[in-house]
Length: 233
Image (cartoon, rainbow, N blue to C red; front, top):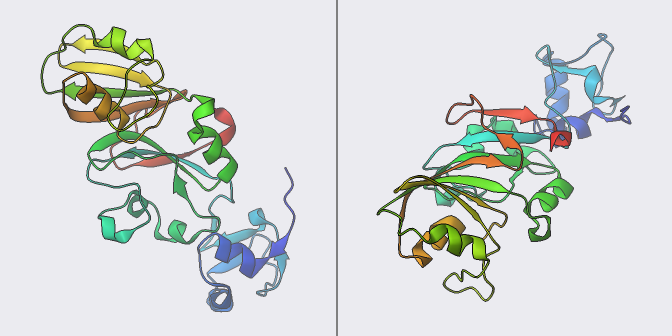
């Protein structure tokens, strides 16, 4: 798809490389160049793929989707006061992009696994909206062995969580062994998996999200990420 041309300073600032006023400095120092070595000024209208930073193509334009293997100990927040942020694992300039990169839903501090981040507001809304019922699979380690009726309870669509007014939608439980399970849910309520097991008298001691819709982590190591095509799901 051919993209319209925009001012160079607007393009670079929207990607987080610098402020609009700093573009002139980057040009003077030869950090920002044109693929055809054309002369550039801050107000030169350019296409995204015409510009290089230190000889390399620019970061992806708006519409970026990131698949991350979130480590335990990181929070899905933009507030530095909450501790280590998942955004700290990305290039620093990505935190300055406009539109802003945000997580698609949240994994709590003590949960690891597949996390999506995007600056595409429409996609974020689609993937987090309850009406779209996006399936997500979690692997949980339990404090005590299963009682045996959890799969039936979770699948019934009648389980009430403490403080909620509507029951959880049906969820699929796969038993690996008495204290290890996989649970597929299509909602994203606050601490939902942990609260579901608490509602049946158990406690989750470790939690990992392994899939999100059709996406999987593959060989992505803890703390690593990769860009994915938003049209792939």
